[in-house]
Length: 263
Image (tube, rainbow, N blue to C red; front, top):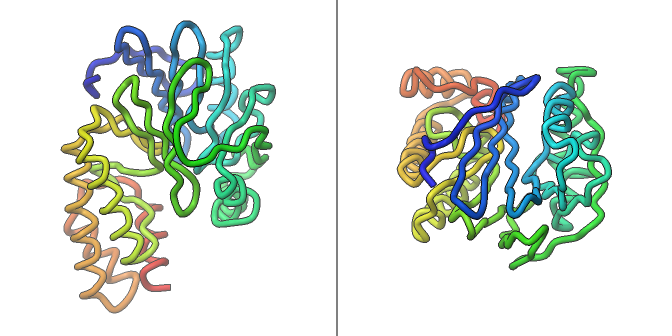
């Protein structure tokens, strides 16, 4: 699959980009919500599996309408545990650590923060997990997935479309980087995606990307660490990063990164 080879369908909120590999289709939903969330639907033989969940009421409603009457085999709930009004009757899959991340851990803290900022526009209800995943291969709705557990949740390899899903990449936008150690872990993770030669890297905050984008992000993370080491506080850090990357979006993520680096 080529990241630029898709057809577009407008939804009540946001739009769907549909990639067709023949036997399997990828529906990439750009929610248009304040966090620029992205949700993915993998379709094979008329059955769907959702990867991640929208978290704002408008995008939840729009995607529920898009899937009305379709056969949804399940939802993989990884880093975005909120938005439980999305497909409430479908089986919800997650690793044990991803479920804990959403209920009690860092994910829960983010959910509480977003609920305070966005109010009723944000669906803070947490998905109840009915099926627990473990590291390795699983078949859902006739589609083969490979689960890769991470420190917070899990990434998903989708061999039939030569793609992998992770939380964040964004080759020309800021990301939440929780300090130098986290940056190193992200770099190692991206290098692990480059080696197998995936066609697409899917993330919940950006459109589908490719391996060149992963290489760009690695350079950004290395530069971020270097800038942080030369700064004495969060404000000087943010100023230096903006000067180095003036066209980057995701200012709210840069604010959070500064908080992690400088407290």
